[in-house]
Image 1 (cartoon, rainbow, N blue to C red):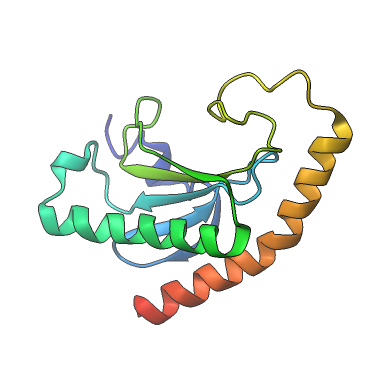
Image 2 (image 1 turned 45 degrees about the vertical axis):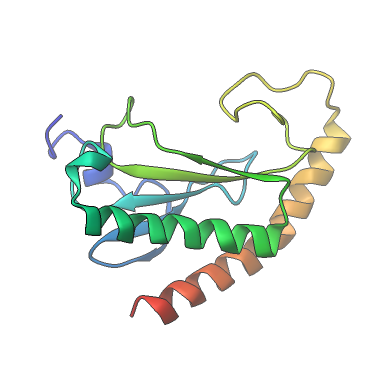
Length: 149
């Protein structure tokens, strides 16, 4: 896929939280996972192994920083880190906080939702996540700005 056809070369890929020359950090705007965050490599690169060791290390520092802030602010049961690139062959990482109350737990967020969850449980989960979202994004962007000037 050429850069001209790549969606991540032509669009932000979500709501921009922060960026520099190496990466951009976005909120994926997922209705069921309000803090679903992506770290997207700015240049069009198809595979992690296309990056040199220093570039890989720097990219993963951003991924781990997002994970650390999610753990600190959101207190999830688990964080899912995923890098597929099958649909969008451009290096990017998904950082998804997981909770026992989320509609897919413990399965992947892309699987079918659990049918036994009622609307009240899902609404309570979403309300809690939305209340924490602003603080999470504020802390994350403050840390990114202070570390990566």
